[in-house]
Amino acid sequence: MLIAFITLLIAGIVKGAIGSGVPVIVIPVLTMLYDVRLAIAVLIAPNLVSNALQVWQYRRSLLPLRFLAAFCIAGGLGIVLGTWGLVVLSPDILSLGVAFAIVMYLAIKLIKRHIALPFQTAKRIVIPVGLLAGVLQGAAGMSAPASVTFLNAMQLDRRVYIGSISVFFFAITIVQIPALLSAGILTWERSLFSIMALLVILATMPLGARLGKQLPHRWFDNLIMLLLASIACKIFVDTLNLY
Image 1 (cartoon, rainbow, N blue to C red):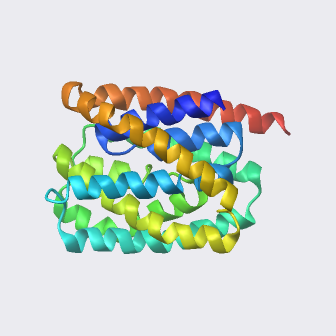
Image 2 (cartoon, one colour):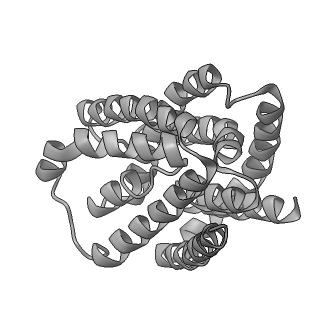
């Protein structure tokens, strides 16, 4: 429980600093401690409320509406497909899915770190990227290998990036809530845990916002990558030891 609490504190700081990072940090840790389904359910309230706040805060600094609408609609469809996978696949396979999502995220970050994606190219691939991001979010609780790396590659201004990624996260969470309810994954008990997680994250986001204005983005980036690499190794080792 203490590890989960500390993880939420760190996630709130990172969310406030760079506009994303809560699922990327929290999902792997809770998957390692408990299971993927609980991890995804616990993050529903934090994803919904924290991103709603940031959408409002950065509402004047967004990508074009048509682009965001295509991104979000495709992501919503992906959520439905991913949640179906969350129901039918075994916990061990889902855990490995989280670990592979982490590896994919890290690989893209390392390979594409200095490559810029022109807006005209981004417009042509926004729907398949949004669909993939939704599937990853629905099945593994982490859309970041697709969504975050996609917008990062566009090399947007910090405010535009935070506002736009928050719109996407908020939109797919709206779709994810009824999907999880219908699947029996989002229970009353898990909803209570989710609200508690939200309070912790909201308490630390202002600190992260202040740090984000003072410290280089790459500091948070490198911290997340180091943490994720460690967690992915742990999940792989634990899962393989079962066999």
